[in-house]
Structure formats: structure tokens, C-alpha cells
Length: 270
Image (cartoon, rainbow, N blue to C red; front, side):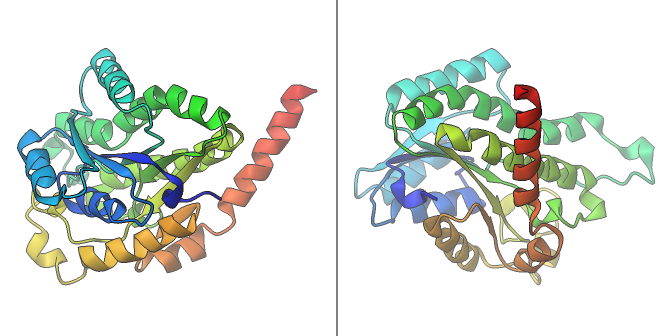
């Protein structure tokens, strides 16, 4: 399977902090020397990132709000593709995490819950849909293209206190398997990145950083392990304790889904 080393130009959505930022900078350092476009809604952070890491001139930035109205988001993505016609890979790292206690339903903020769903899943599906015509076109010209999704180990074994977050990541996980199979014949390669609990700003909003810092994988170590998997061209890239969880609960699922896809395809063609 082709790998991230084959990418000439990659957009990292959600790269102003945390995993997205770390992966964007690690990709920039690849020997293949791709152009890396950092992307997010906080322009001041994007400007700081480019100013401090752009000695090579290969680090670009674009401001994007993934929760933009659908047509506005589609227009923004069209602008990105027009500006960077060599774009052949997109990594989706934007996400938020909220805690909900369903034993006290009166405390559930449905606006917050639905925003989490939109940020972590619906916006990803929209962006994939809008980027695909360009990626498929390149793929059909013989150039491998890539979609990198970021799910979570919590898509495999959920943490009940953040039930909706886990559900959104389970949706990304399932979608990634289906798209990997559907799009393979189009030369669009879908790779699922599956982090464990990782050092991140994601936990600051809930005030859990101090407690979780005793258990998480450092961002430096996580980035190292994940980049090794991406360079190898692995179809999914777990890290830390998620490696064993994936082996226990998920091994063989991609192959089983591929067989099911083949059976359904044969049925519809008869």
C-alpha cells in the first residue's frame, strides 16, 4: 500500500494544537519533503506555527471553520483545492470532547452534545465528500491519494463519562473501514489513526488535565509511533494500549468487511 511518504501535499485539518499540530510538523520533516498545509479556525495560532517552523518554505496555512454552513464549507474547500492543485492527502484531526451524565438527564446540554457530534463526525463526512472529487480525479490519473481519519481507542472500548464523544469516534471508525474498501479501486487510500489517551489541550475544557496526565501517552512518544505506522503504509495506526485493544476486538474486521462488500457487489451485478 502507498504511504504518507508518497504524498506531495497534505492538508491537516485541526492542526493548531495537540495531535494535529504534532503530526503536521512531523510530516513536514519527512525526507520526501511534502508541502504541509496547517488548517484551523484560530488564525493567530496558524500564523505563529508558520512563522516559527517555515524555514523550508513548505509550510502553508489556511483558516477554516469546520462548523461553517454546508455551502460555505464546500466553497472554502473548493478554494483550497484551487489554491493547492497538488493536494493529494487530507488528515482530519479536529475534535472536541464533552462529558455528559445520563443518570441526570436534566443536566444534558443538547446544544453542546450536538456541537460535539457535528465537530467530530458530521463535519468530517461533509469535508470528505467535498474533497473526494479532486482526490478521485488525481487517483484515476495514477497518483495515489489519501484520507487520514482520526478516531480513538475509545471507539473500541468506550469511557462511559464521555459517551457521546466515544459514539462520534465509533462512527468515524466504522466510516473509515467502509471508505477504505469503497475507495480502494479509485486509488484513494483511507487510513485510520487510532490514538490512546494522549497529552492534549482537548482535556482542558473539562478540567481533567491534571488527573489524566498520570495516564496519558506523551505527545512526543505518540507522534513517533504514529509516524512509523504512517510511513509503513499501515491501513490503521493504533498506538499505546490501543494496539492490544485493536488486536483483541478489531483484528480481522477490515478483511471481513471486504468480503461482505464483495458479496453485496456481486449480488447487485447479477
